[in-house]
Amino acid sequence: MADRDIASELEEVRAYSMAYYGELLPSYERLAKYRPEVLVDWINLRRSIFETESDQGLTLRELELISTAIEIIAHKPNPDRHARLAVEAGATVRQVADVVSLCILLGGMMTYMVSGQHALKAAEEQANGIVAAKRPPNK
Image (cartoon, rainbow, N blue to C red):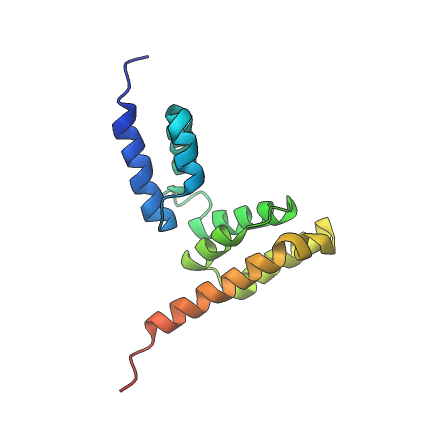
């Protein structure tokens, strides 16, 4: 394999993190400190999945809803990010609630208590933020 310019690839990862998440994730920075090539390669895989422009595959909205469901069913404590990104990509709070409901059916009420409630709250907050941003200022 040709020599890599891991420093410049890492800067691309940081730019991606800022654009996608709105921040540099501390977890990314921690891994970059010790194994930057692993982080870079993982982000490249992630980008190949989420930056699809094919009209034949899943939309970004669908990918984010599926990601939200997987995080809920896996009892991840913070599925907020994908729920917010789903709304940002065009999902409604009702669609996130449908995902949460499916997870309750398949994984039990504990999926809601551990993860689902946080995803639903994040979707509401994101939707309210988007709605608030579109309102004309009060005069």
